[in-house]
Image 1 (cartoon, rainbow, N blue to C red):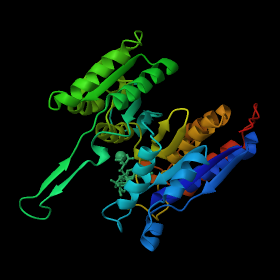
Image 2: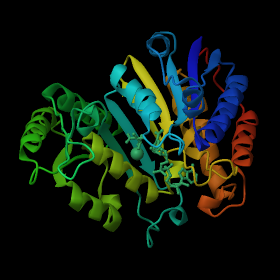
Image 3: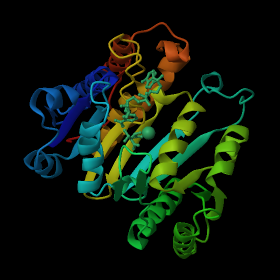
Image 4: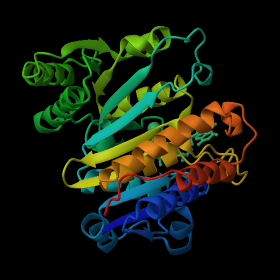
Length: 359
Ligand code: NAD
Ligand code: IPM
Ligand code: MN
């Protein structure tokens, strides 16, 4: 039996997670899985009602009593300071030490991406974002806040341990998936202290993987080159902030934010899956959010619980939905969030399992 915590969160997080759950339920039927989905109400509504973001007991339960977490998105215009999202989302990343943020982006059909002339160019990027350090640790503070003399310090933290392990995760992924190149993205020309540590770790770890080509790029040049020739790159490894930014860019050139899944991992210990996008207040409540990124996360959950065939069926159903234009307006379609989710779930229901997995 596997227990999955379902945290829809806010805005379109609620809408897309409903469809991801629909797909998990279909897979449970088809492959006879023993999955327990536990629904959690963490998010802006609860915070605004009770003042509580997430308790220590809830963290413990999420960490110890569940095999994985599936999250929608956190963020709400009624909480302009974003306190609850930082507590819950960054809280889970930090407290569960989810140091790998793997954000794959693949152009499944040439017409989906934001770039022109991509026919025949295979774009598949795997961003490995460091997920527990960098400028996200919130060390620093404000001095003379609210005055003309205000000073704000937001420290950038890079530990050898933190950097080494994300670089190692990127190389291990490249080796296991047969990818030929790992590119480290930094800003060593302007930030030489962090740059030196990252480059030393990249050489040390990379030299253990002699068959994999390695190179480094400055983040500004990488942003440019991802638009110019994204097909050149394979695995990117980078810090927390640059990874956040580059993963939105990678998503946009491969079909948009609505398509992109991600995994926050402490390998062997904890896993939290979430689409790369946020709560999208501009379209929340309209029923038009693209659920494919969230549904792809459901596929990653299936893979984790040992239902490889279900995971592959989810990916195949997403691909078929795209080919048949069962898509939301962001991809040019006319389907609603629910119609896309129901179509993909029905496609799974129609599939003939060859494997029965006891998840
Ligand atoms: P966003 O990702 O929510 O939206 C950016 C743009 O992409 C919007 O125009 C939105 O309509 C569109 N978009 C996003 N997901 C889509 C989908 N599934 N289908 C169709 N269109 C989609 O980013 P934002 O507007 O900068 O942030 C909104 C809120 O979400 C903020 O509070 C932010 O902090 C939060 N956020 C949370 C997460 C997370 O929980 N992992 C990630 C990013 C942003
Ligand atoms: C993401 C989001 C978060 C981040 C925000 C909501 C703090 O943008 O998951 O990509 O910056 O990590
Ligand atoms: Mn982001």
